[in-house]
Length: 331
Image 1: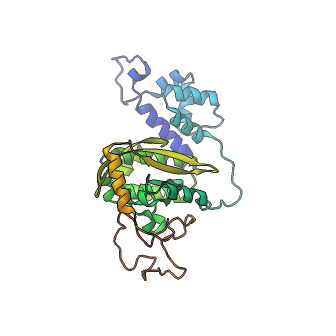
Image 2: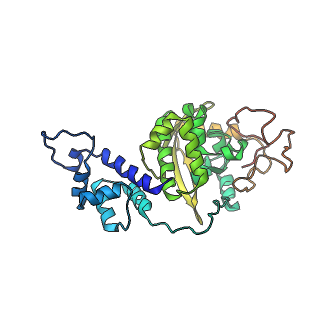
Image 3: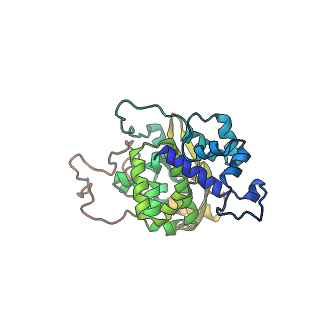
């Protein structure tokens, strides 16, 4: 992602959503407006800078922008805390690279976090999200609720890919459009933090090509930090559930978040979750063996074969993994 281009498009999108009435700008009926939002000169006046200065900033020419100016622009655009932080991230100077950039280091889930997933199994669906929305680890109840990520090829274990490229996702989340749009905003925020991540660029490119909804929402330039909230689920086995979630940053690794779902005690959702937990209560051989990002964790041997005689490349069957536990799958 080109940071100057992103800065330009982000500022224009925020200005376009802010009408004169929202900003307290008097509009003369003698001056027809060709844009839905504020004009550049109106925004510049609200921010206390010259129109020429703001124009250069919006064009991505943001050399030596002071924090005071960015604060003023953020206030004029009525940015929330996440958007303000994103604006500062886009304008932060980046050191010139004189050596070839190394690829991102593989993310690993600590044994202690795997133990926590094991503790939560049977009680709460829980999984670990890494960069780009990669699902790095999950407990059996989470796999039963959403999809058996551990049965997927490792490069497909991604929440955004499932949400936009698997038809099952649209029936799983009754409010799919809301959930999916929030996912796009979360990826956009991460792109600001890691603009040179090649795998994130590849993911965004794939989803842009394959999903018209993703393409539309990506162009909106919305950013959102997902820390907590409530999601509605329609599970094909246990029916409707209302689940609250908390995303907890894993200590020592700010690029990993432990997502834990909970339900209201005594609610129909609690009864449905208990039914789902009993449905998943099947024996499994050490399903919480730690693994690293990019390494198969589906029972593959070094020669590509598996303990059940199938191949790790999926040559036996191309069927999508089902929800629920799989006795030869480990997270």
